[in-house]
Amino acid sequence: MRRRPFYLSAPGDVVALEAEAERILDSSPSHAAADLLASRRDISSDLATMLLYRACFRGGNGGFLDELHALPATIAPLERTPRILIVPGLHFSRHPETGADGSLVAGIVSQLGAKVEILRTDPRGSAGENGRCLADQLTRMMEESVWVVSISKGTADLRAALGQLGGWPQWLSGWINLSGVFQGTPVADKLTRPGLRSLMMQAVIAAGGIASRNIAEMRTDSHLWQVPVVPPTPERMIHILGFPPSWSIEMRIAHHYRWLTEHFGPNDGLIPLRESLEYPGRIVPVWGADHFMRAPDLARLVYRLAHYVDRNP
Image 1 (cartoon, rainbow, N blue to C red):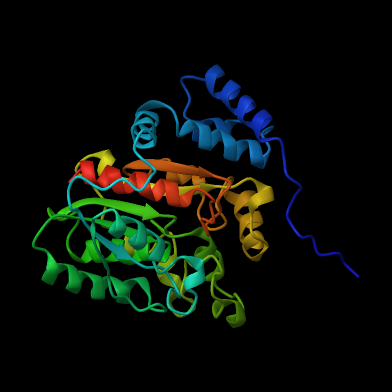
Image 2 (cartoon, rainbow, N blue to C red):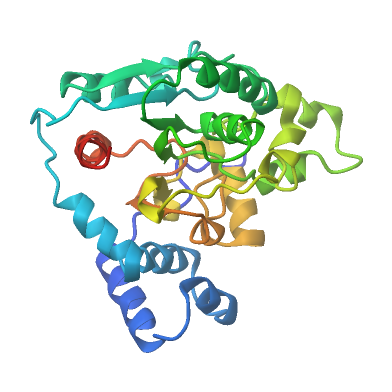
């Protein structure tokens, strides 16, 4: 009988990985991390993930992370009363244990003094359907500036809504993408290839990024990504993304992780990480978290983000 592994690999030496990644980055100051990975064939997948992770702490993004990490991660009241809207992810009502319902974010920011509302979406709806629903809600309720937090597939829903609204509206002070599907996933490309068995077409991506009945909308060439996202400044668009080594990937998305690693390099089990460094805005990398974002210190990050929003109305 074939042995089924509990994990993709045994834990690795993260200290050695970090030191080697820093050495590579220091020795190639004129090359972007993505270019380095394209030119080097001798880098393991875990080292490649660490290299991209450490690259986030350099340049303008590094300065942003220094500012963010200096903010309180405690129950300290906010100075203002910011308004924060939350767009939940896939299956948030049936599986609240995933965190896709936004209750963690809502609970923390509300107890600090923010005005919070979780927007209405269909937990099994397509990004296009939910985008129309969100666009209608946002158009009717905008009387003051807001920050929006979108979770997993909720990011695709919100981007679809902004596309229908014609781009970044004036009332949107900032957008926090929490482990979201920002511009599709190659996994959807794979599952919608011509000739693929209908059984696979009916599958639901376990990572919470794709609704089975409208999987084609989550392709990387979907019309939903045609309207560019242009924040007023990079600091107004924040992407919180997991940078997992192989030993921290949940086995239910391991097959996606392995396929993406082979064809696209480092990934979170659903999203290639190399492309994320080109997203508009800033990246907040979370080492050891995959697309499910089960990071032990996620709450501390949410506290810091609440104070960041408070200081950037």
